[in-house]
Image 1 (cartoon, one colour):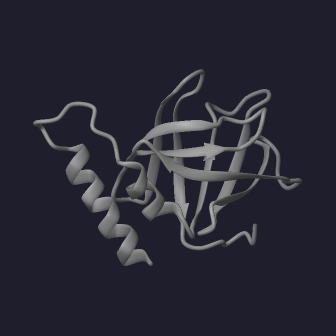
Image 2 (image 1 turned 90 degrees about the vertical axis):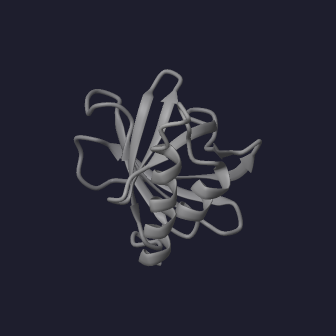
Length: 137
């Protein structure tokens, strides 16, 4: 899995770093190839009041199994679910009414980090990618 992830990230970096193209993001199928079957962990904006950290496992059948907690708290995760798709060349998430949902642009780096770029009201969100489902979501 690590070899597959590294190869996908390397290919993504080549596309993103191409000097002949401005604002090139990873196509949705490539994002899916990196995170489906794996887990991402991230945080919306800086830690502060009403800010959560989260982790989400993306299943091969289009489901998202997630949990979140306040960023300054240990334990007490709250579970949630959702779905992912690839639409019009973008990776899309649907996480319910009070969570960020939609089709977004992504960038990746060779260290296993994924960034959702320019999300309205949030800006950039950085994710760490973990193999499989280490938290048994």
